[in-house]
Image: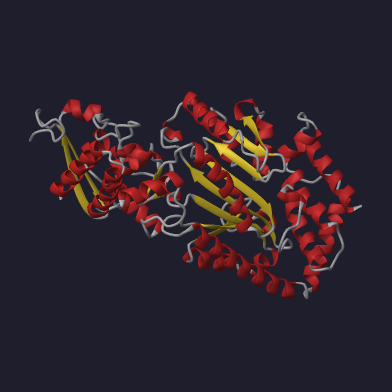
Length: 170
Length: 334
């Protein structure tokens, strides 16, 4: 059997754990097991499992590769760091690990859709994002009309091309 | 005016109301991923953003320069969290002279705006916190997502990032044995009720904190309204319970004896003090005995170990502190 991490060497370390009645098996070669911190005979693999925050992250039992190798580009956190500390590394982590975090967030709050205050600058962002192509085209047409009225035909031509692009993309 | 020196609305039962907003800056990793320099940078950014804030004058305190005793004293006054007092690395505090506003920088989140007011005043406290929030938001970009709201280091604070709590003095409900049932009831409503000076349901001084548990999927307004109406129900229950216990001569005897000890003890520990003042204050509120209530109530905070040491000299031993504490109480009760 090949190591599930590097998929090159023969797997020599086999780990099986059972959580809520569901068994998962992991197979690593010696060097991968060591670099993932599960190699030593005296290592208690369960220590690397969701410990104190298992109640938060109970559903989030993913393969070791998913938990430790996939890291947030901004702050360098992997999902394991979040499980162990119960702390998220940065704002980008919420996007990066969204699907993994979601079950726990739902368990804590019951809901997972924000209601309440929105910071001003984000309020503007939200509005801009929600514009449909049709609305954008309508805006541009108004702008083009204004350019024509001002006899700024160069600008009008640029806007016309933008409208064309949007229509084609649709 | 500091919350512990004033009696506010429902002041016979509600000691204070606190609103805390958790915020993070988009451009920095959360504190768990920041070293000392990174934390200091965040603190500088926020200090700068609030430098022309005129609503309240805010003093900048570098926590690394504050003595451990002074930091613990701030925690005793509920102005900062105990955790913030014990680890000062890279951390800073913005605080108003009247002790109503304290902004912890690089606690669990980059920014924790806290407003604490006397009595039941969740709306006023929120409005005050929101003003500061807006002032920061004008200068700095918050970490925010449409789905999850304000992004916080711990997922338990996502959404509004708002934790509002009411500090309640509930001696009669404790004696009635009603706290366990009440805790279970409020938990079903998305709130938590826990002892303020100890973990679990047994609370020293019969002081409890009622706070909102859920922050995602519920607006600030709705959460505050919930908190206010449940606090009022608990206040009403406490009043009913008091009407019953004060007709019991055994209980009245306890109140008189508590007052007697406070008036004549040569030494008092802070734990003993909160236990005895709880009874005496309730007796005074129910007009069984006469004591200067606001003064006695503030002593619970002012005579706590670190705060007392700060006022009387840092080298006081525990024994000396207990003697000074008893003396100060004797002065208050004449």
